[in-house]
Length: 94
Image 1 (tube, rainbow, N blue to C red):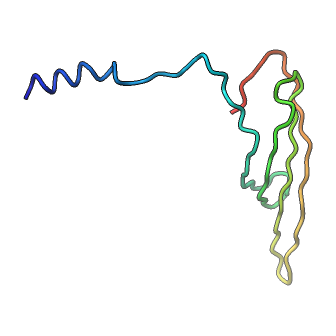
Image 2 (tube, one colour; image 1 turned 90 degrees about the horizontal axis):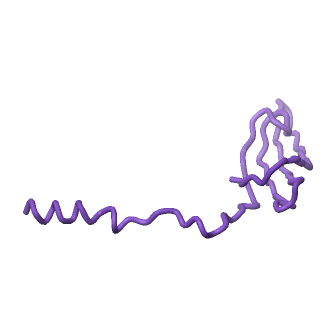
């Protein structure tokens, strides 16, 4: 029994896999997130889409919906933003 466990334990590193460095990482372009006290001032549910990820200037557009509860009624707003980031070298978006 000890030899079987020792054999399986010694073969374990050969059965595992590592990262494949030959493949380019895929860019995840869509993000959905909840934001508190951000662009929607109170709280918002937002959607973000990345554009131009292969250029020196990275850009994204986001839009969302904000619900502000007041005593008599709800205020509904739509925060919209256009973002850009100037980079000196290639970065990987996560």
